[in-house]
Length: 247
Image (cartoon, rainbow, N blue to C red; front, side, top):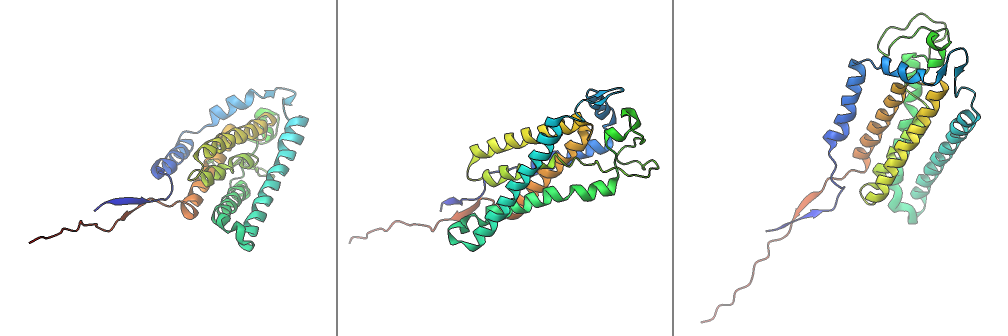
């Protein structure tokens, strides 16, 4: 009796996929990243003048506003494509993949606002260390008294880049080379968006790292829920040889 594999998803170590991000999150919570955050942010700050990118046309109008609009447009097109796959038979084979993309992108772009409101973390440009008026408090500490709670954790604009981890997962089972390219693209885009906002004083490094971790976990979780299909062995019928008896 022999066994063949029922084609499913390409092998993926879910323990590492979930475990590594969770470990990094634990480290960020246990080992306060404040020192690193301030050290990096001071590189973009000029005392008496402010952050070097605060009023940059390229960082604000192009990399922030126009880039966000472009990402929103792509997201809308993804939703429209999913709806089309429900209506037109020729696109039916794409329903699951497009449905996954809509789910992952929606979740990746919707968790930020509630967390910002819940945590009340201030942006670097609001802090006294960088010319502002607010007192800095770490993520898990009680917020210093203020009339205007912050809205800066986790990083918002970074989601426009890191949300596209979903593209990696939607491609990995059938187009591994394209999936690797999508992963590199996502990391690069998220990093560019993150650095741009850091240069403007809008976020600390850890704010954007948290965003990347959340987006990865959401994209992977949605992948497991919608697309991931473990390879299942199928037993072939036993084939016996026929013997001829002669007398």
